[in-house]
Length: 479
Ligand SMILES: *[C@@H]1O[C@H](CO)[C@@H](O)[C@H](O)[C@H]1NC(C)=O
Ligand SMILES: *[C@@H]1O[C@H](CO)[C@@H](O)[C@H](O)[C@H]1NC(C)=O
Ligand SMILES: *[C@@H]1O[C@H](CO)[C@@H](O)[C@H](O)[C@H]1NC(C)=O
Ligand SMILES: *[C@@H]1O[C@H](CO)[C@@H](O)[C@H](O)[C@H]1NC(C)=O
Ligand SMILES: *[C@@H]1O[C@H](CO)[C@@H](O)[C@H](O)[C@H]1NC(C)=O
Ligand SMILES: *[C@@H]1O[C@H](CO)[C@@H](O)[C@H](O)[C@H]1NC(C)=O
Image 1 (tube, rainbow, N blue to C red):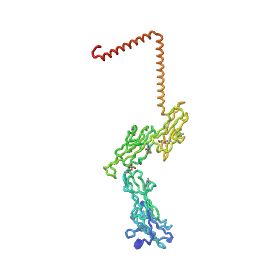
Image 2: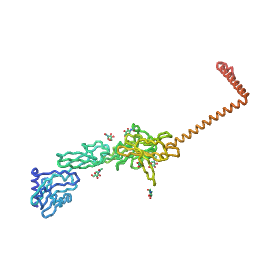
Image 3: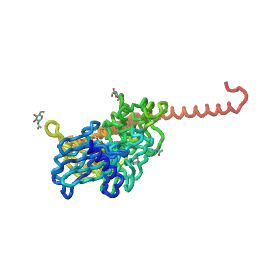
Image 4: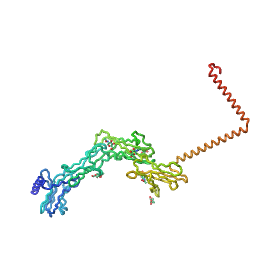
């Protein structure tokens, strides 16, 4: 009892004469381990008899941890395990106090006293750094503030915010996006070190795609998913999709095989992509009753994404060299192309072999060995973006690609038509020939036919004259 009293008096003396005793500031992030240093650098106290750690609360010293001459350890009942002075360290003349899971309330002035041959007293000021967002759960497009609190004031420190390894000076977010979600770190640099405290920001909205810049690539004939995934627990009561051309904002009809998926996901599928399906697709979800917002307010969250349709175009010449071209409806993000040969081994194992790193691939003469699957792979800044395949069919000497079956039908029909025309011409010529031959056989008949024709003509002419007279004459003469 006497000892405590002595310490209290000592502590108060120290508090009031703090400038004489060396005080050390220690910064620590909330939630982490704080080590309040108390090291006997000169090793003057080779065998400590007693170690006292106390905290200045108001005007009194409260024991935090104590080891008496008898070897008995004392810890406050209230917070037994959080503050300890690890005895194994004593051999290294280290009497530092360890506080686990530091809270803002732990901040303040601590006193370390070690007794042995001599007496050592150290005063440590603990400062706790806390990073936070208010609010820390927001909906896309709303605002939030990032705060970096340092207990007991913020003198002689610099504060920086860091997200995903990048530093920002601003700590006020006015139009929160999905990119802002995650851990933000407040970095406090003080005289003697750096402390980082982390706060996490949760952004409700559409997690995939993260923003309006995403591009989806799909080959003609394939099926493609257009993602629109809302954060967990955020279920829109209506979801609509619409399509606009890349260059305009006026809606155009969705593709025929467009399928809005059932269930909580708002993602959509185009079962069979066709040439012309390219464009901007927008997914919009209407929300209400978000817990942190006025329940009656309706919020519309939407995301735009671009669908790029890919296909292999084949040079149209039916003979000679064949050129396969990798065609994308928008190739602005493509950095390179690669042509690959696809072969299938046993068990349908696919093997691809790079052939050439160009957009177009020219085959001088298509032979049996070129038959089969070819693949064009396209790359963007981040690597492979996708691929599109093409089948070359070789039937004996006839070369054809998979898209030429229509041409063949046309060719057959054209040839048939040509034959028909030639046949009709020949037939007509034959008939003319027969007619001439007949007339030659019966010359009299020609005269008769001619006379008959002349007679018919003459009669027709007089009838026309009479008709003319009739028109000119008002009297009903010609009945
Ligand atoms: C907020 O950000 C989104 C996407 O980044 C943008 O479309 C929108 O116009 C911004 N709103 C305001 C008010 O700046
Ligand atoms: C954010 O921090 C928490 C704990 O502080 C950690 O569990 C989580 O993995 C971190 N998230 C990211 C994206 O780094
Ligand atoms: C192609 O895509 C880019 C973005 O990747 C976009 O800015 C551009 O408008 C698109 N062009 C066309 C013609 O679709
Ligand atoms: C859309 O998907 C559902 C099930 O996923 C399927 O039953 C339906 O046939 C699909 N509709 C179209 C037009 O493909
Ligand atoms: C093919 O698959 C069977 C079983 O699925 C396996 O036993 C065999 O080894 C495979 N062959 C090759 C060449 O991979
Ligand atoms: C081609 O693209 C599809 C997805 O579109 C992918 O699953 C496949 O692995 C790709 N193949 C090669 C050989 O890159």
